[in-house]
Length: 208
Image 1 (tube, one colour):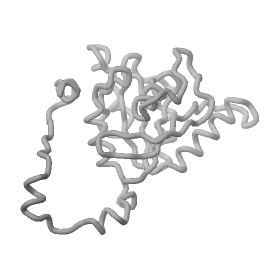
Image 2: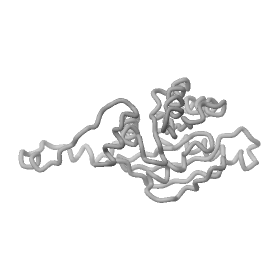
Image 3: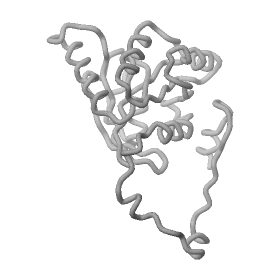
Image 4: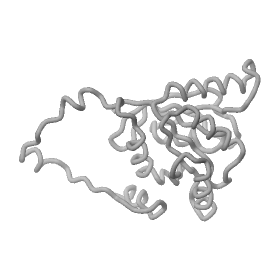
């Protein structure tokens, strides 16, 4: 599959942390100060058997177009326009803010397939914040910990569900043919781990 996924959200929700985890190296700046990412950063990401282009965006603050914040917003809007799908991230620990709601409105307006992620979902406060994210009207939030790599299997499923049909490469269709008994016998066994969010699926997969 070949597609572009843009990570969108207010500053300091963990966008760059997730970007670095999916890219596999530290290309995006990670800092506790809001607004550290001042430009969009791109990298080649992998998640399971998915390979895709990922974009780490800056802020979406309303500002003079000539100002730094205005240019950051323009870069983010351009990334949204170029992406095949969006990953909208909120901070489950701090709960929803007016800025989250403003960002969500812009994401809905784009009409792009959107995956809602509630980052920092560890603990009871995180669980409550994940439930609160339903109010954004962007579907079921995926509890995630970008820092610890928890929830990535659920993110994988959500990305597969959100992908537009045209992202399938032509060669994927060309390779389709009936499998022989010998090939079927040699094929690795695939096991799906199912269950509700926060049941420990990612912990089990990481252990295996």
